[in-house]
Image (cartoon, rainbow, N blue to C red; front, side, top):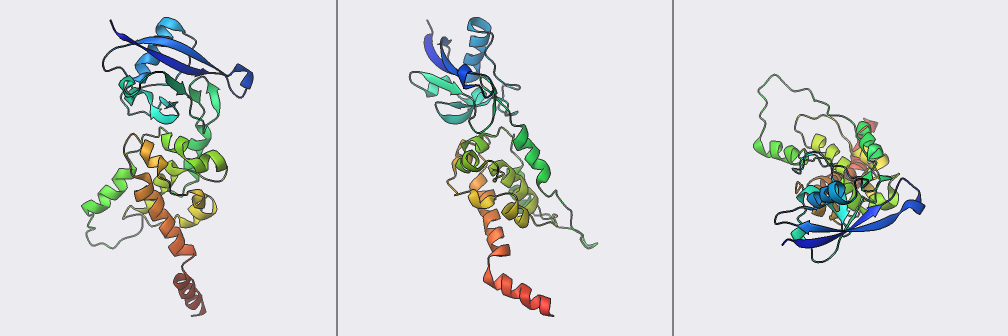
Amino acid sequence: MSKAVRLRVFRGTGNDPTTFRYDTFDVPAEEGMVVLNAIHYVQSRLDSSLTARWNCKAGRCGSCAVEINGTPHLMCKTSLGMYDGEVTVEPMKAFPLIRDLVTDTTASRDTAGAIPPFTPRSVSKRPWLFYQGDVERSRELRKCIECFLCQDACHAIREHAADYIGPRWVAKAASFDMHPMDGSNRSKFLREEGGLEYCNVTKCCQEVCPEHIAITDDAIIPEKERVVDEHYDPLVWIYRKLKKRR
């Protein structure tokens, strides 16, 4: 006989706190089951009104992002065997609630349009050497599946959502900046509009990334360094002043 796992699932609609509650379900756990399997069992056998978002079941679409026992996870990649006792499943708290486990990430997705786009720089007619190291730096940041777990884990997003674009979009900007053919500079955008200074480099974003992207180390810190170089380095400031006088 299979062992039963107790799921404690958040329920509620929109911004109406009177609808918020937790329902408890006992689900038979088979070997290899993930949290998404358990949610589907609830929907098909116990409560068809439970609302959850999912698509590929393979950790590629990012749709089933939730918080499991208080930590952002993809339901399809989180084994029930990781937990002892009750498993609490809640929606991502950094986004507006739609219903039950489904949140609205529209505002975060709209941020992508504000990032200065990839802008190819002019090059000479000589053959352009594209080194493997250049490829790998930009490619790593392009592995993002936009599950927004990093946004959900970000303390700065939870406290300053209106001012900080968040780790996913800093990584997007960095993927452009690190491309050897890009001719734009996004440090001014990240400083003035992106709110990059709100990030306190706790690395919580890269700890929850299902693609294991080193968001802090390979995107946020290099972009912070670029902002400092461009806007706060006294030697750069003196150079620009002297250049204007010529």
